[in-house]
Structure formats: structure tokens, C-alpha cells
Length: 551
Image (cartoon, rainbow, N blue to C red):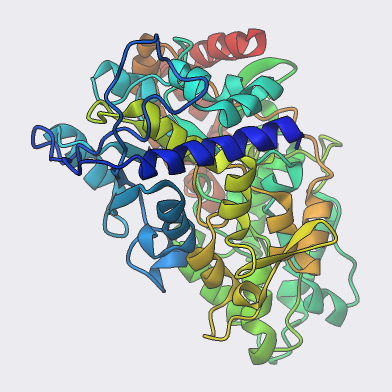
């Protein structure tokens, strides 16, 4: 970090402090019944690169923000609001801005979000996964709910702007088709931060059967067959589930990821520079035949279609599951350490198969931005400039330290030029796990528009997890379709097409796996996809992909 940049950050904090000291009449009132607190500007004339034209303005302060955001499960065990997190307590001290959090009940975020929009009762700021909405954030802007941020970023967010200037891919990911930026997102600049899921299996089972870690799809089959037949859990029963996961697609644990060694995917992908839909390609049928074989031979969990993460995890910790696709293994290793000291999971490389490549279609492996942790400023916000300055602080040098590591002397110390977590995080006297402590004292784990620091990751991850990530990163990501933006008409049309196509395809995937629908009818399946408009959907994505590549 340059001295000039650091001084700029210190100047920002100083300006905010000065604005507080200048005094405020405290005349904040509720504006128009919108639920937006009419807190006044956090120094409308404060920013060096502000939009003043010399006209005299009344100096006001941003005193309060209302923010809609889900409450992380890592914090919910110790607090009821983000105000119970040290970072936002410290932010209030540093900026004088108090946050009124609107946390939807667990599992009701989408419902509450839609109700909020339909009511028109908007908070100042919304954190949500806007990319998953029909029309994306641009549609919300067209509907009058949120505002474009380009000018605000240019004039009031020098820290976030620096990330945009230095990383062209980031702008491609977050800009909408109209060229506008409607939200700030969490950033994962270091590749190590993006690789947190992958294939894995029981190392203690391998050792018991004197087997190596599989590296090819054929070796995986041999291993799974041994898991089923040779009693690796040693209980004298054939109760092992060689491979488990959840419904064919759409979750981290999807069994459809077994397609990847065949060079295919269950969704849209890039092949030879062109967008295609995996199930239309001949490699898909070959991969599906392999998964069907695992199911028929009892090597794939017969209950996979019924499993969510909780049910899957319970099977793993009941000493039943041999292999799966999952998050890095820290939770299991920690939980099982006392219950079963022999329990050990190890990373399996992304397997090679007929494609001859180690392929992955996990978009997290390549995406800099994290769409699920994105923030937009609403039209109800009376002080967007000051709100942007408040948000931009998380991307500053001081903000980076606060959001990733907390408060120096309390949650971290500087050692050899690097921040090192104290026992408040790593060995909490109140019995909090590392993830619970991080939920209470920092934001890097729980999610916020900020840049995750790789030093947070290096300390959070035990050696076996770091080893796993180093194994998983040796993979080709060239076939992953990047985060694309669409015109309103494209979004409307593909949403209409894909609603029906996805329902049909998802149903057929599981029917093929379980043999309810024989693979001899696979060509009929492809024909039906074409009748339903899959080629039109591909053309829409191809146009968006071409624009992305030319940005």
C-alpha cells in the first residue's frame, strides 16, 4: 500500500471525525413513512473528490442507516443482529453512523425481500444476491427501487474504484448491460480464496484397504467398489455408502459433478470458445451412463435425491460415506476428532476421464466478485454520497484490517509484518469455535462487500485444508461460463424458456440416474430440449458471452 493511499485513507477517517465534531442538530426524522431514517449527510462537503460545485451547502451528518441483510449463521449463535458484531460496533465508533438492521427470519430472505419491494417500504441499503433475480439489479433500478452507482463510485469510493481500475475482470462481472454498476460485492482477489470446495474421500478407509487416492474416473470406480465390498469401516456389516451427495444439480454436493471427468456439465458451459448446453453434447450421455452404473451397482447413495447438507453430513459423521463433493473438510475433521480419532478425509484431485483433462465447472473457482454478498443503495436513501463513503471504508487499508481481522490488540496482533489472530479468535475462552468467534468479531467469514484478505484464510484453514486446496487448484477452468449480464429483453426471454427447460431437465437427470428412464431414450430427451427452445437460450447466452469477451 503506497504512502499516498494510506494518507488518503487517514484523511477520509479524519474528515468523518471532523464532521462529527462539527456537531449536528439531531433533527433526524422518518422520511415519508418509508422506514428510511432521515439521517443527514456524513459531511456532504467532506470528501476531497466530492461533487461540490462551490455552492454553499448545509453541513449535515449521516447519523443512521437502515440495511436489509440476512444474519449469518456464524453470528446467530452469539448475537441477534450485525450490531452484535465487533466490526459494526467499531464502525459506529469511527464514523458515528448507527445501523438499523433489518434481518429476515432464517429461510425467509427471499419472501421478505419480495414483500419489501412490493410494499415500497425500502431501507437505505439492501444486501442481496441480485444476480439471481429476473432482470438482475438493472430491473430493480428500472422499477425505481435502487440507483446506479457509477458516479458515486467515481466521486465517493476511491478505494473500491481502485479495485475496478486494477482488475478489468471485476468490471465485466459487476457491470450490467447498460454499463451501470448497481451494487458493490465481496471480492476474492487471491485465487486461494475461491477454491473451498472439491472432491474428497475417507483416507482411513483407503489405508485400511491399502488403496491409493484415485486420480482417474476408472480408479474411482475401483475404489468405490472396494468400499462397498471390503468393510472399510470395520463393523462387520456391508453398510458403507461408497459415494454420496445431493440431487443431481444445483447444490455444492450435487452428484452430477461426476460428469466433469467426461468433459461435460449439467448446465451451460463453454466449449471451443462457444456457449453450449452440456446435456446436448455426446460426452454428457457417456458421463450419465457412468453415474447410472454407480447407482445400479449400489455404489451411489440410493437416497441422494432426498439429501440436503444436514442429512448428508449426518451420514458422513455416522461413518457411512466413503466419497463425496463437499466444502473443505475442517468441519468434519474437527467434529470427529474426539468421536473417532481414526476418521480422516483427504482431497481427491479433480479426476481425469475420457476428456483427458481435469475440468471443473465450479464458478467460484474463477469469479472475483461474490454475487450473494452484494449491496445496493435504494431510492429511499436521502444521502447516497455519504452512504457510499461509509461503504467504501471497508475497501480501504484501515477498513481491510477491521473487516478481516477486527481490532488490533483485541482480535489480532502484528507479527513479522502480518496480522495474526489472538486467542479471542483461535482459542476463545468462552468456548466459541473459530467460526463462531469469527462470526462475532470479524466479517471475512460471514460475508460483506469488502475484499477478503488471504491472511484471514491462511490462519482459518488448518494444514489439511490448505493441502486440499492446493490439490483442487490444479484444474482447467476454461469451460466455465463467466458471470454474464443480459438486456432486459434477453433476460425476460431466457427466463421464460429456462423455467420450463430446467424443470424438465432436472426431472430427467434423476430418472436417467435411477434407470426410471432408460438411456436408450436419451436422443428423445435431446429432441425435447430442442423443441422447448434450448437452442434459442444458447443463442441468448452466446450473445451475452460475446459482449462479455469484448468488454
